[in-house]
Length: 381
Ligand code: GDD
Ligand code: MN
Picture 1 (cartoon, helix red, strand yellow):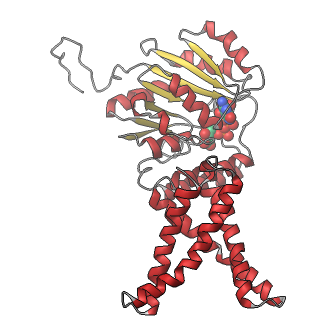
Picture 2 (picture 1 turned 135 degrees about the vertical axis):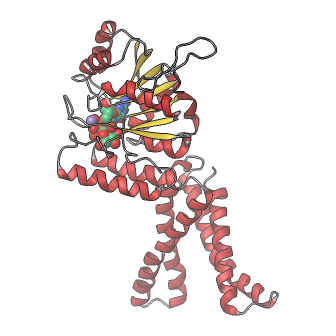
Picture 3 (picture 1 turned 90 degrees about the vertical axis):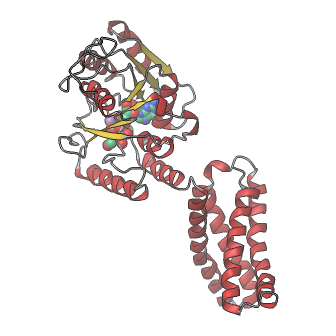
């Protein structure tokens, strides 16, 4: 809307140079032991958010220090409501905290930002104004477009890791992240109507990635920002957080059945290695190759089982006891082996295929059956 005449209700026109009157905003701040930062953050927000932008701040806190007390002591000095949701049983880490805050948000717009002053609150009005102007569902504050920088990402090691992670993530989700230069940013604005909290499975730091891939906001746009130095304390990110990020990527990438089947196949292929190694070792110590085949197959089965449990079906394990899952998995994996030969015989004898195509077809059929059987009988959805 860029006209210079009042509309039919007589409301004043919006000029291109002016920021359109935005909806209200809930600022969600995850905090984990940030007592040295929250007072300053609230002061910066107070200085940044204009009176005509209705605002509330929701802290979602998993601290073990006195962060909640510091926030409650500073809140009365703020011209907007400040809430602290302290989680007694934190789940999902940073991302889980952000989703809690989003559920509690009461405004049209939700801005997510860190509690350590690395994200400049002065950008909040611009994020909203940009979203309103281009009618976007998501506005990402990016370090990687012109005008942005990552001054606060201390050290070339962290910079390299961050760059590699961004590249890998963009390679895995080229369509979903089209137009998002900084999917790892922890600073963004999203319309509340674009958030379906119930389908999110937050796991650690990359909540923007989770939202972009699962909730698929309609239009995405970016605004540059300078990632500042942390004000007080130190980063809560650890090597464990890095592993959690890889699990998060795996979970997002295998959300569709087809992607899961491909992952299942790749893990299955990797099982040839322990299978052949065991076969070699067993025949080497003098076992006849037929019983050796059967035993060696169990090594491949065990390897596949462990990888699938840890990577592909990690959050679907709770439906059955581990012993039950192990037994069912072993039965399906070995049934596959036993079924293949009669299936090949059937394809050759009844359907007139020659041996090679019959074997290839039998491999495909038993693979799909094994995948479907494992999904349905071992890991309920
Ligand atoms: N509630 C809660 N629970 N908050 C957490 C948790 C948690 O388990 N872990 C971290 N936080 C809070 C911190 O207290 C801080 O306010 C914010 O989340 C960011 O944590 P930092 O530890 O400061 O993260 P960082 O600076 O290493 O990483 C930031 O920049 C990255 C880009 O380089 C984050 O914004 C990342 O999301 C971002 O990818
Ligand atoms: Mn930080």
